[in-house]
Length: 394
Ligand SMILES: *Cc1c(COP(=O)(O)O)cnc(C)c1O
Image 1 (cartoon, rainbow, N blue to C red):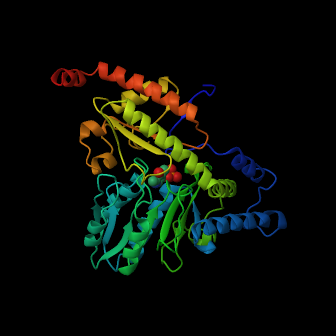
Image 2: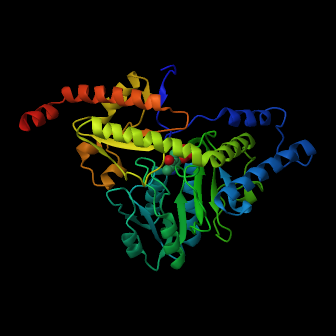
């Protein structure tokens, strides 16, 4: 291996592409003007922002005026849920979401519960796909909002978004989706899928951190997130993050243009990893569906193993991986997503998430499997549980 380390944590964050950084650089220096200024050199920056907005709208089949730049996925999720709850609270106080959402959604829902909203957390099946019959049954006259993530960040399960959009539309309920993991990985059409609001983030698709957007369909009466100047149609005031917007634009442009070949390459590596791990390491199980998953997501539970020890030993071999979501690591609670698909605590604890990027290689996949085999064996050899198990089954 000639690289310093093998990065397999693209669901946590990605490196900005060199083209992204290059596109951003002039906007720190020569083209530093405030987009709201009238003189020519600054006004050019207004045009650049509009161009990126237009490109993003096209990528989703939405309208240009419906794209609002934010500071990332978490901000978009917070804005969407809190503002919709406030705006439509008089109509009803019930919100439907799922048990497998990112904490940007779940913790916002907890906050809204304290404010008097009732939240239904719909179950998912064993593959991590939301149960549509349960979702439908949860709808009440007071339901104002449904928020279901497009694809899960831990196990990669892709949700039936078009079906949920149709259900929401039929009942006149606003539909928001956290598409932070899916955008740039799978095709999205906000009109065909009846999506009213959609969150996305730059740093999950090889753009800069701290920039993202919220799509808000025309006609939704959401309050402004930040009050001040007239930026973002007065809904998110403050001088625009021009460099971030330019970087986000370049990252999206590349992600959309390369989606097909990039994800085909990732699927090949993903399937290779899954096949080898499941066939060469005993007492391992794949979390999430075999094919209905993000092109770059692998999530495996190893029995008799502690996920954190596995991560530390992989790190010593130069492999960057995750035990669930970056937000969950550091706490001892097993992942809420793995519990939601029905894994018992002890198996959820022995889980490993590997998320690929297009710079990864098959050679790296081979290295990872070989190291993983050795590490899992070493950890099991130290485990009294495994010793008992082997004795019992001899
Ligand atoms: C990373 C992530 C977020 C948070 O996005 P930030 O830009 O880091 O705030 C939200 N939802 C999902 C599904 C994510 O994977």
